[in-house]
Amino acid sequence: MIENNRGKIVNISCIRSRIFRSNMAEYAASKGGVVALTSAMALDLAPFNIQVNSVAPGFTYTGMTAGSFDDDRVREYSESIIPAGRIAEPADIAKVVLFLLSENSDYISGETIFADGGFRVSK
Image (cartoon, rainbow, N blue to C red; front, top):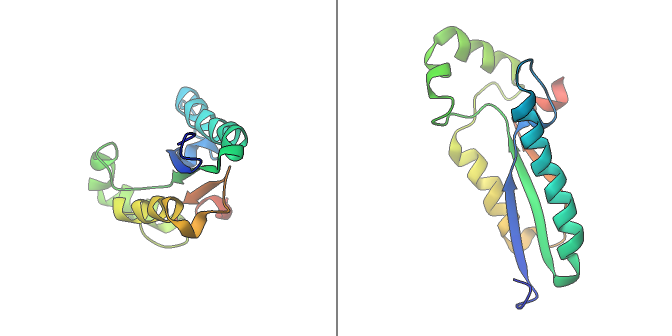
């Protein structure tokens, strides 16, 4: 990327980098570290026309969360606290990543986009 004087990097963080739960200190620290790394890399790579951003998904159906949302009570509660009223599908997150990789985001760098259906701002 440096040799080509152009590029894009998208890191994946998590809503837990900003909204915390007990007994998740290590996970929160690792995801917060991704946000910090994104900012530092964006600054270092800007002279080479390389944009670095991150996406922080909220509640999303994934292999890691599969069992959690099988319980109707957990799923319904989760949906009730997300302003968008639903849990994200992986495709929802992929669309944000694709945007950040597109030329439509050429002037965006060092940002973390929270793809969480409005959950973060509702807290």
